[in-house]
Image (cartoon, rainbow, N blue to C red):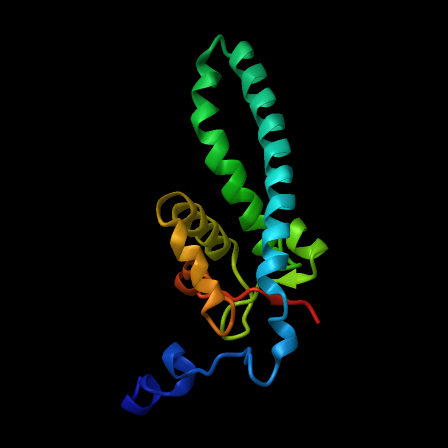
Length: 162
């Protein structure tokens, strides 16, 4: 690869402009924080229902395997939560069920599609931030794109669906 190709804008994410500008497209960011909070409550209810179903399945599997399957109980909580985000945000609609109800979508900061791995990483960062560094969630009130720290670290932005 030549020196010129290595430094071309296509190969350098830092040189790319943000795809979503709060100055020229304010409608994308209107009431996003409030909508995210409501979407979180909806998604938390859905995840709790999925956890209940998964726990029943693991309990039955534990009975069938004479207790050996009960070792999976520790994996149910992270697997369901991360899987839910990976397959909804990383899926074709690019949003969780709660976000869809609230009219939100989650693209990458440069306009690309979020992969399931990045969506799971984003959820992991969210839960880490929520449990360990709760005040960092308040960053969204000061960011022009209404992004929390976990959004910035994962490279995503939450915007209104247009």
